[in-house]
Image 1 (tube, one colour):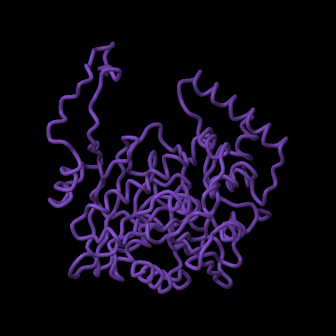
Image 2 (cartoon, rainbow, N blue to C red):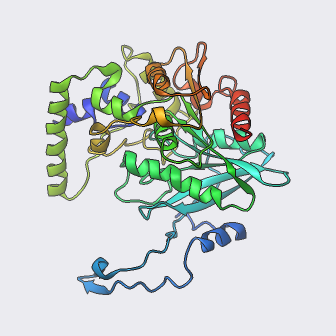
Image 3 (tube, rainbow, N blue to C red):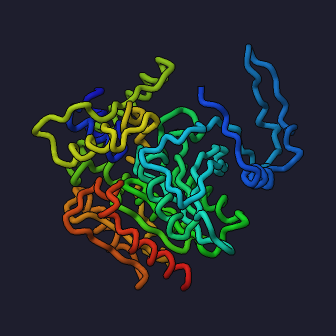
Length: 397
């Protein structure tokens, strides 16, 4: 059963599914005054007391949610590391600080905020996330910092249940919650005093490219979306790599998935799906070798990264297996740029998504010779000039 889970859906990140196929005291962050003030405006001052009545149950305090009428937005205090622990160097051309904000599910998200060292007036803003199973200290932070050097205020955030963001259980994902994560980032950016709320865009990398496009179909505050080396995680989870899983295979996967749920609940803990192997067999596909070369080496390894360590929870992929992204992609009116390497194994996801998009403000850009992971961190390959032009043009329409 475990083997079947791993081969079909258990490790639902772009990378972690590859792994299954091959083997298959931080201190509280002292936040800047501006950040504390921002968070204060998002909370009602007198929300310390809720209308729900707390009662003691054993050694824990149980909350009577049935009587709770409190609708204030609460940002849970979370511990954030104070050290610079990214896989890239901090640029002397940007200001950096950590911020937090809450989504509609009550989960507090952690983010790194980058802005130009010097600027006047209000800035255009970009929210960046991905790859799927990565953390903000990896690719998304690299993108955000580079955008800040080019005149944008940019945040790279950890999705719910991962990295430094809140949410329990850990290392789970949900398309609904993850799309809400993007919207929460836009909530945050929209009320910053130095951000022009009419000039907000998003970037998604790998599986988060698909989430970004899905969010653009819902959130009209987004003026432009860039999906880099995109994965359609719903298609990948249900149909497998290269659409190799048929209906019978999906049924067997559902049986294994639900057996695992029962087993986990019986045992009182969640089974992890397993991450990438330390060593890659010679016969492994090239894209698996590329993932290991990024996540398991000094180039991209990070101790909080899902893909670089124990992978997603074995039952994390249920929601993705049971729905499809892009249902309303044809109705996206804002600008969309899909960027993909011509040599990427995942190219079909961008090509198929592009066919759904409508309007003359949609574009598919192919990078000759580039693989899937080249667009994670290869500065000479990632088309930052194009991204800068794309967003600036979209913001002036």
